[in-house]
Image (cartoon, rainbow, N blue to C red; front, side):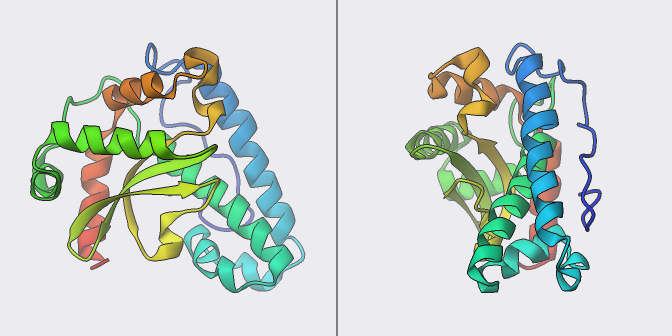
Amino acid sequence: MENNNYPFKNTPLPYNYSALEPFIDEKTMYLHHDRHLQTYIDNLNGALEKHPELQKLSLEQLIKISGRLPKQLQTAVRNNAGGVYNHRFFFEGLTNPAKGEPYGRLAQAIKQCFTDYENFKTEFKKAALSVFGSGYAWLVYIRHQLKIVTTPNQNSPIEQGLCPILCIDVWEHAYYLKHYNLRADYIDDWFNIINWDNAEQNLIKCIKNKR
């Protein structure tokens, strides 16, 4: 990720706000990136402003140590560093037009762990629908295999030592303007804009880092 250290800035999306139409609408992308993500960035910078000992740490390092920080600072860092990391990861994982299915090492790993891509889609959608309230569903790599996990709020799987491959944001602000309360429809549309090139590279990095 770019701009991975304090002070954090809101880097541009890798595509236009309207690029994911008709699956995710332009206004949602604008508000999601320019308003919601910007708020997490501002709050994270504010939380770190008086803690120079934390300013040298990367976004990932901040998330990993957040549980060891004093309680008040712990909540601010976990929520806001997670909010920045998770949103950036989500945005980078989208593209349009997208390749229809995973390929390469990721396709092989999905077949090994989930039998086939259609079964993976079924299991991933089930996980994304199971998130109560706000959070994310993730495909992660751990101990030489893929696993589907969910996280509440802005918690991130990297705090648990998991290596993320792709994710879907199921906070209502990610889909409500277009899909209203129909999260299942939003998930179905999301499958059409997964950046499988990005996911493939994420898996290769996870394997290389032996996570």
